[in-house]
Image 1 (cartoon, rainbow, N blue to C red):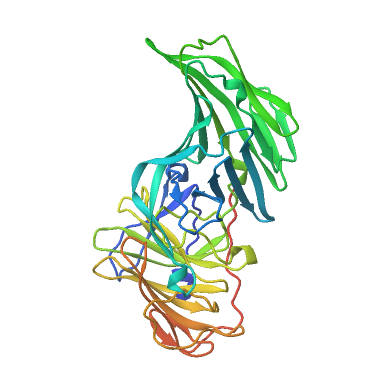
Image 2: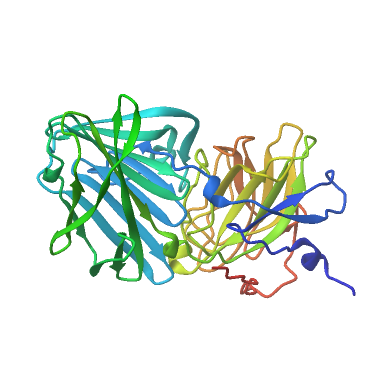
Amino acid sequence: MCLSKVARQCFLVCFGLLLLSVHSTLGQQVSPVSKVVSIEKLPISFEPNYGQAGPTTQFLARVGNMDIELHPRGATLVLRSGNGPSVLKLDLVGSNSHAGITASELKASETNYLIGRNPSHWHTHIPNFGRVTYSGVYRGIDAVFYGNGQQLEHDFLVASGADYRVIRIRLDGADAIAQQPDGSLKIALADGEVSLRRPDVYQIMPNGRKPLEGGFSLLGKNEIGFKIRHYDRSQPLVIDPVLSYSTYLADISLYIAAIATDSSGSSYVTGQSFSVAYPTTPGAFQPACNSCASDLPDIFVTKLNASGSGLVYSTFIGGSGFDQPFALAVDSLGNAIVAGRTASEDFPLKNPIPAGPPTNLAFYGFITSLSADGSSLNYSSVLGGEETFTDGLALTRPVMPTSPAPPTHLSFP
């Protein structure tokens, strides 16, 4: 069967069940090999708010299609689906609004936001942490937020002599809360549902960890607390509920335009994604899709390690309009170079060749070099005039309709 050049370059993958692993050298025909890699292995990282979030947010985490915003009185979860975002606030009723909030477990990764053309609006070198602690959120009680795979855990650490019954959580944004036979809570939102797993309750005793019988208590409209039987108030107590949002891990609609490998065997993939659920990594310079909410795709660049068992980095690149890559290469320093076309007036640029922004629905060619760690741009320019596009890193006149052909989609649960 004879395939066109474009068809030979396009491969469909699903991140969440499969990641593409490519074993070849640059310039040779590539052979895709599917390898099962769980996105749940990607940890949740918390970043301090350097201006990339609203003013009341102190720490922020992004995982899948959910943002986790930590503020002085609790947390706000913004969950995105095809029908728009749902917002769930976990407010700690009656808590100390001046509780000390600190981060710990500093990670090697950083987060960078290079969105738009104005460098003064970029936020770079934001540290990542594995854990955020609210000290004294209630008298004698601390709260700790951390990730466990794709799940958000928030432990309450109750000191000896303190009363756990003062903990009250109001779930603003919940349409309904139903307690399940297994003790978990099912929380219905505007466009889906999340659940709180029955909490693990235990005490650390001199002879080791002692599990306790306990669970949720429904206190009133959209308010919950905890109930625990027979515990030693002279010893510290831990209450560990887990938020699960698997029903919000939406389908990932994308197509791949080009792949490449470097001298170490690492693989690079670029294409388009229409989905906010496409996985990005801590340290990526654009961790979120700019145009997916408008049903327009952003470009992604993803680097896999040589074994295909994990992501080195994964990032979006793009503005608020239609962006499409056609070619990918990797230089001797490990910088990924992507070429394609864009209709975004705010396509990210660095040291650009003067060309003027795209106007109306005209496409400009672009060429962008991404740093070896995926955290910044080495350079990025738009090139040519109306309806110019890049093919194989060379500028040519278009051989396709001016309106973009619809990409092939795959939707996976």
